[in-house]
Image 1 (cartoon, rainbow, N blue to C red):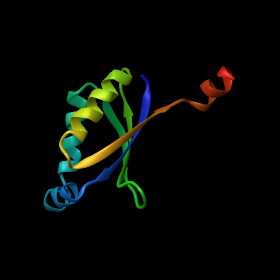
Image 2 (cartoon, rainbow, N blue to C red):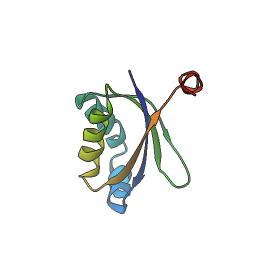
Image 3 (cartoon, rainbow, N blue to C red):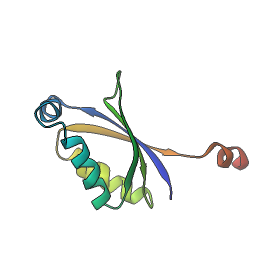
Image 4 (cartoon, helix red, strand yellow):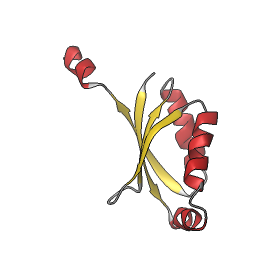
Length: 93
């Protein structure tokens, strides 16, 4: 299954949501599963983004739907990158 890297940055509203309900982070992961993908790893990070997620999804359409659904809530902004295994990348050159 294709792998995607999804980075997110919380809005001020999102920061307040996480502060008052830290378990919301895991609830969002469950919602991603309901939308047809799976979070296989997740980190809270310092710097430009607040979270980095490794997500497996059947295709880019699924990831687009997830990004749109999550982004429409106004609690975070998302950027999704397609992850290409290095061996596959090298063999395509």
